[in-house]
Length: 340
Image 1 (cartoon, one colour):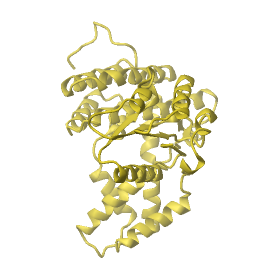
Image 2 (cartoon, one colour):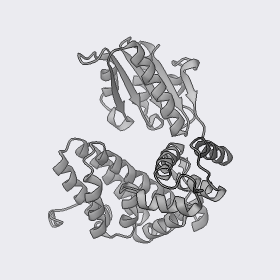
Image 3 (cartoon, helix red, strand yellow):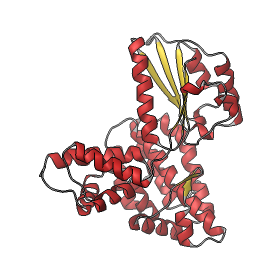
């Protein structure tokens, strides 16, 4: 059977395993077509069609289902039905941030093709960072290592990216200098590109003018994947905000609410002073009901943005920011300005 199950919260290790699977397929197939799905895209049998239908442009298809932890009962049944009678021309990889998935699916994938990836412990991350820089002939202080761990927010994939960029940056400068905590802070601040995580603080403050300026820089990159990454990044931030608001509604103090913050059940504690300030702004400016309305608006925008041209996408995002910041999630009406 050509199917794999990648479980657990450690995104970086899962990406490495996925690359191994892809490279292995390329050794035996001249052309491998990669198709990625998310559960919300599979309401009409799309994933089965991709797995069962052959293509003229490749002799094998690698079909990925990401965020499988949010798959509904119908999709689970669809996956189980396919796994019971798989095709030879496709490989299915099911990816979940949880440690398990429905037994209807997991029982049909061989144990040798099921992999679970756990988050690294703080000590393991520190050892990995120290070893990574030492391999490149660079010394880094303990305080700098701690800061790198903090800004990666338990995402070792992001941590690996930041470290590789920092190594390149350092090699172009003074190769003999030790990396201090201040160096990490300066590098990250000056090199960070505009994205959903730099836009969200502006939205939290309800600064429409600066939010639109940031949006223009983000979409100006021209990368085809940028709009969807932006949308999902904002959705992640607002779901994190919602978890804090729900904790506050349940009687938790601010400190505990921030420590218990989560996104789709996965812990995402807020510790950095800048993040604390951002989410305090958001708590002051948006109610729980308004955050729920904003999340609904972001989800609704997904299909529209996928099917839009670059110019229409920009216009849609501008209206979306207006709906979030000015309307606080309420639907737009004919009385609202369309030219921002």
